[in-house]
Length: 400
Image 1 (spheres, rainbow, N blue to C red):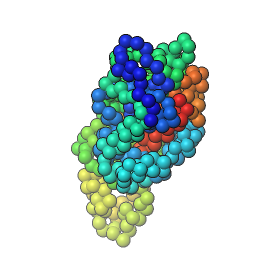
Image 2 (image 1 turned 30 degrees about the vertical axis):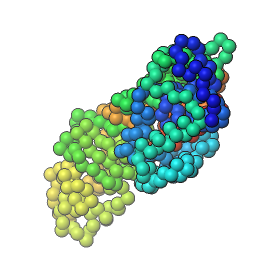
Image 3 (image 1 turned 60 degrees about the vertical axis):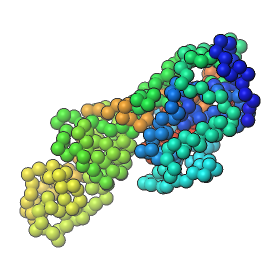
C-alpha cells in the first residue's frame, strides 16, 4: 500500500502525485487499482456522488461482467486489431479469478454471458475494495475544471477541491451513452485539446425506430424469442421485441452497432426453419394463418398475412414463395435510433491510431492514456464492453 498523501485535503497549493485517473467507472477503477498495486501514487477523480452507476444498472442489476467467448472479432473499431493486445494481457478468465478471490460467483446465460449471482453492487464493492487496498486517494463529487501540460513535464489537473501535478494522466471518463447517469463528452474534449484525432461517435447497442409507414403500433409488445437481424454482411440471431417506436431486443441492439442511416435492416422471423417445417404439406387442409400461428404470435402472423386466410392447399407455388420470402426477409429502413439515452454504449471515440495498443498511451503525448468507452473500441452486447474496460484499464495501470 502506498503512503498517504501529504496535504491530501489541502485546497490551495499544488499537490504532487504520480497518476491521476479521471473517471471512477469500470475502466477507471481497474486502472487505479492496478497502478496502486504497482506502487504508484494514484488519485481517482469523478464528478458523480454515486460510484459506478453504469455498473449498478447493468444486466438489470445483476451485472453481465464479461463473456466466456471474448475475442477480437466481437469488437468494432476503425482498427480491428487494436484491442488484441489488451484482451490478451488481461482476459475474461483473469477477471473471473478476481471475482473468485472476493468470494463472488456467477451464472452463465445465453451465448456465454456471465452474470454476478450477488448482483451489481457486489461487483462495485469488489472493485472499490481493490482500489482501497491499493492505497488510492479517492475524489468523488469533484468537478474537473481544467487540464494542461506542466512546463516541467506531466500534467496539471485543476478541480473543485484541489490542483494536482501528475506525471501520468488517464482519461477513463466513458462515452456519451446514458447521460441520465452522468455520462459526458469530457474525454472527447480532452482528446481534442491534446491533438488526438477522433472517430465520429454514434449511439450503439440501441433500439431502432421505424419510418412512419412501417410503424405497426398495434403490434407493440410482441416478442420473438428467435429471430435474426442483419444489415449488410453482419447478422445476429437472438430475440427481438416490437415496440411503439420501432424494434428492440438483443438481435436489434447487436445489429444497431453496424447500422448506418439509410441502410436497410432485414429481419428473419423464423431463422433455421425449413419451408416444410412452417407449412407442412401433410397439413395442406389447414389455413395458413393457423399454421403460421404455431410458430409466431398470432397477432404478428395476422399482420404478416394480411387478408390471407385460405387453406395451404389453395396457395399457388408463387404465392407460397412470396409469403415465405416475407417471413424470412422483412426489410425496412429505420428512421433512426432512440439515441444516447437508450444506447448501452457509444461507437467511435478516440482514434486508436493515436494510441499504443500495448500501453493505451497517446503516441505523441507521453504520459496521457485513454481507456474504456472513450476509445474507438465497441463490443457486442453480452459483457464484451465490460471486458474491454477491465483489459484496457489493467494495461494502462501497468504502464502509468
